[in-house]
Image 1 (cartoon, rainbow, N blue to C red):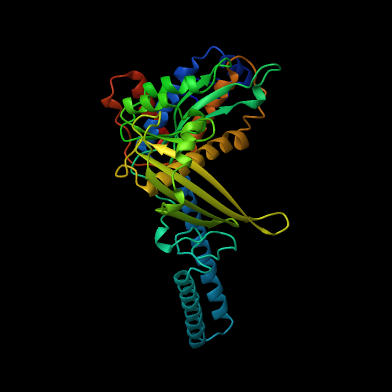
Image 2: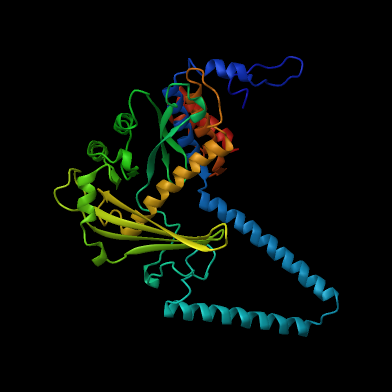
Length: 417
């Protein structure tokens, strides 16, 4: 890797030497940061094409698979130990039969509870059938779907982040606007936000240079602007807007819909790490007369979370959000809208956690010109390697006539190996 980056060879040791911290800090300023972001995001895309990119759900499933195998080995060892103690085969068969009967009785009781709608929910959660705490909503069993559903439209999200540690006294912290893919968390683009303006002036020009065919962009309330919707439609994509108080007329128009008469068309239920979570969505036709162009659907998403506080008491919190989308019901059914909305916030939290908790970006005091932007670019590159696994079909380096693209394709293949 150091050789590919052009690092010098140590004559005595015979190894390539990485640049010092001072050298990296000195080079962080004169670098063309936009070009660096474009090259690294392009490299990440080529790496994703040549390797298997695992989503956090897939990584979690692999960890659970290893845990299940470890438990199975432990059970086999326990059975061997019991056999060594002199337990006869007949007694072991009777004990196994009793265990199977007990498990069948527990499943039957859960199924009866689901049919009665009292204390259990169907086995669509991460932990199977679990008790529902008092105060947590229980919906009809037919409304629940797969919480790991992959929508038909690919979901890139846009979100801004500040490098708090790089703030100079009397000035605001440097801001960066990033675009990332929901499932893989790979960065699609990144741009700096000038201190004299905000993210809304940066997101439009980036969208103008992207191909959004088969894509549904997700943004937060700050970027839910009519001009952005026009830009996305012009690039052949769709968009999901979150409508809050910063758009009072649109918010009032959506709030006036008789949501109590609109049925819940999709929901998910999950129970993990001591927390029970239910998400539901109600979908209606977008009201007429909105300032947003070509809006097809309006939706109300509710999220209920039950957990135990510091005193051990079960607490249920609820959140409600109103959204608008240009995608039709055929292009994005209710379950897909619910998955896209969740994918945006899940990816946002994941990328922020990696850069803040793992890379300590907010604790960094790199205040030289361009240093904060350089560290944000490096953080995006490390996120790429975090979710990349074995190669599937290495990119064809010879098919490209651009030497930069060819070298990045070769680098993707080497990284995959």
